Figure 1 (tube, rainbow, N blue to C red):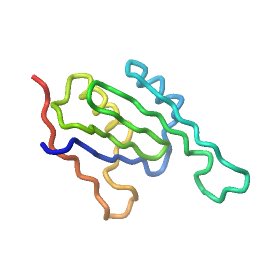
Figure 2: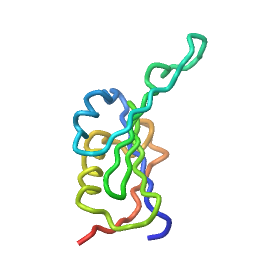
Figure 3: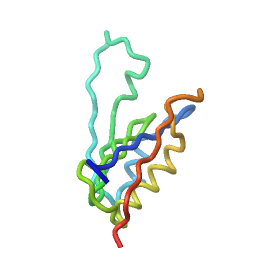
Figure 4: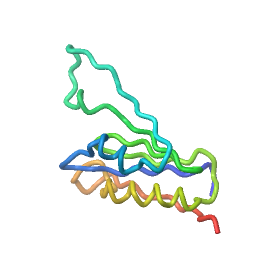
Length: 115
């Protein structure tokens, strides 16, 4: 494996409640980021810009209401904690593409598991 691991997952019709997700991932280290918005901002998702960063051993997940990004900046075998994080994110964000239309797939890169 080369320079790490990066994989995106998506929700389409409903959003993830980040307060509930924070409880679901409470066994991990979590950082919450609230983005400041302005009353003049033109953005359909203005009130949906918050994110959670969930950290396992070598794997990080950045969660927003509509998508998740799994990232490992340095290539290393996934630990059992990394695998637990990966499985929870894949369950919470079941889609591999950003829209219901049949294009722009996100393929999961290969990874190794620690023995």
